[in-house]
Length: 172
Image 1 (cartoon, rainbow, N blue to C red):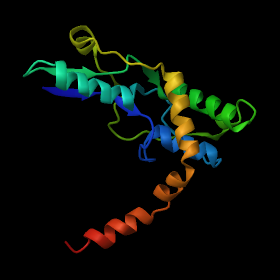
Image 2 (image 1 turned 30 degrees about the vertical axis):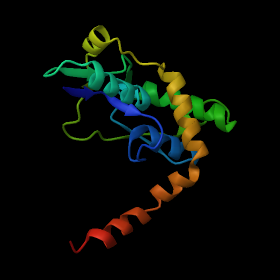
Image 3 (image 1 turned 180 degrees about the horizontal axis):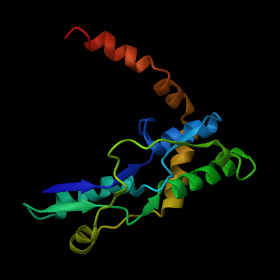
Image 4 (image 1 turned 120 degrees about the horizontal axis):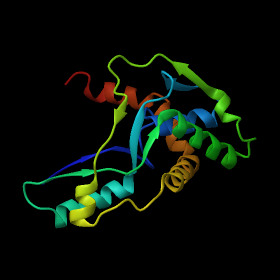
């Protein structure tokens, strides 16, 4: 059995990825770099729902089959970013719209796909799996995790981890 999934989000995600990067940048009043016009579309899946789906594929899936795991939750990047901004403003006690002022448009990457989508109807129909959270609830839980684990975020973004890997593996 194999599985393919859409974009994941949730706790412990490395902060180079869009959602944790933007949470951290908003917290620190840093620019929010949006590719192009923010029109790229992605399907988003809360990581715990992804783990549940993998468990279902493992225990209920048919040998030789491939199951797509998606959130049934497509968002244009700019719309998603605005939800993050609004939610962060609420949680930080800032005036709504404050974080949107950090949006900065940057040149899109060459060859960047306009849309990543996945049809997850097979896993839903055959295995009975479906996402447990709507995006707004999942993003709120994700933001709460990052805000409660700011020390982890600070350590991961400090660059010290790169020094560690250089020291451990440079001469191997």
